[in-house]
Length: 254
Image 1 (cartoon, one colour):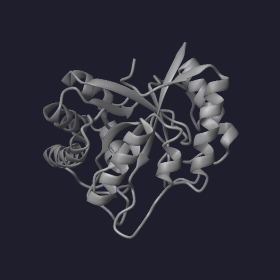
Image 2 (tube, one colour):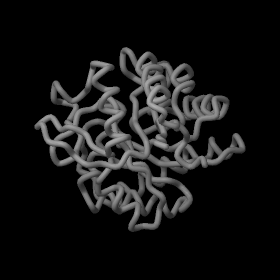
Image 3 (cartoon, rainbow, N blue to C red):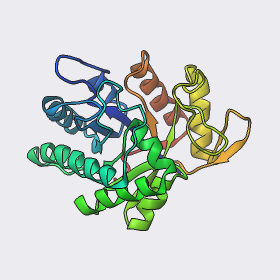
């Protein structure tokens, strides 16, 4: 039987600003990546999102990003491996406090945005992030782009890793995601995205924008909660997976 985890970025509002429909989307995902206050989120939002996830039975992960609220953590920064280590430890610790306060445990860590993409290609940054996760809690799962340096670093460190694929993003022929600054980076058509998802799960392949099939491993699928049609997309993907007899379950369960 085919099996997949569905993860979604959550808790990305802060202060008076709200982003996404977290409570509704939590009905359709199995893992929540909760922002830790650097690219988005704040203590109150973190607490509320942890409680929402627990109420829905959704596994919780830290979603550390670059210190860039204005750019939503999607702008590259000249970051040293030591700085990457420090900000990762700091943000995991912040969310872990709220999770423990609710009597729960954290499942995973998934870097956000530019930090995620930089670590996918930079061995130094990837190893720093993996070391940070391991030293905070070696039981945490490290989520990273399938086939990336981050997955390799996590495995080298002795962490359990989850290879991530994207339902609504296009791929380059080297296996990287198409940068968001490109007009064709995001798949807007739901049917096209669903076809991509099923092929990634069942065939272990994705078609790049250059027309080349890229092999990949699909342990968890990312859907984005901040799009205009995010809730409808989340509903569609669950229905399609059910129709295709794909079991949907949080990564560390069963």
